[in-house]
Image 1: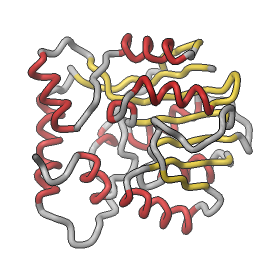
Image 2: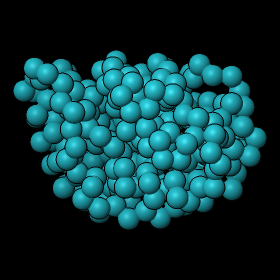
Image 3: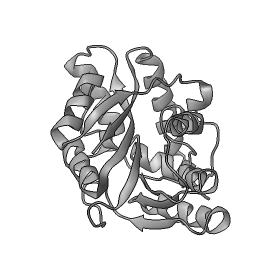
Image 4: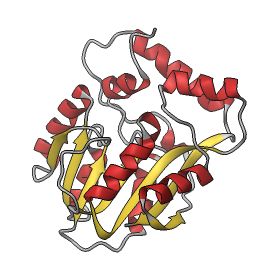
Length: 234
């Protein structure tokens, strides 16, 4: 068994915008919303906190950021203290969020659901979202029919709980209670490459092996594995 997971790699390398399309995709997605200043927004799986800071500083939302990885929590805390001290940082999992129901106007979930029990997580998102609130997911998706061996290879490396295609993601949203599900077409660029890092000190060299394998898998499944952005309402 590997010493480090893919999530450990992201945390130790401090990969900024560690989701499909990076921050450029996030900015494009948020242009499609019509939320007013002061809206309550939850950034689930906030990582090092770049997206949360953008939502707070550029859109002037009341932002809450949820994260469970200890290293990412530490880096997010340091970022928020410097860049956006009004953000509420909460340690916790999307599968069991420590929030009351009907709290948020918008929930943003980028590259999180594939790593957890998606059904349970979406039910939790529905619970804490206000009536008529919006959920946005930006998640890894299958663009082609893969063999069981290929799916197993992807799931093993990334330690995923599931690999879904676009229709399956939509069905999961419906089962959780969401409606008005719409796809947002986002063109990915080279911004999805690992190019903005906040490295932890004294990193284990084994982490670089994970980076190499990640790049190899991206090349192997190019055009067959991608992402989907879906908007839905409660």
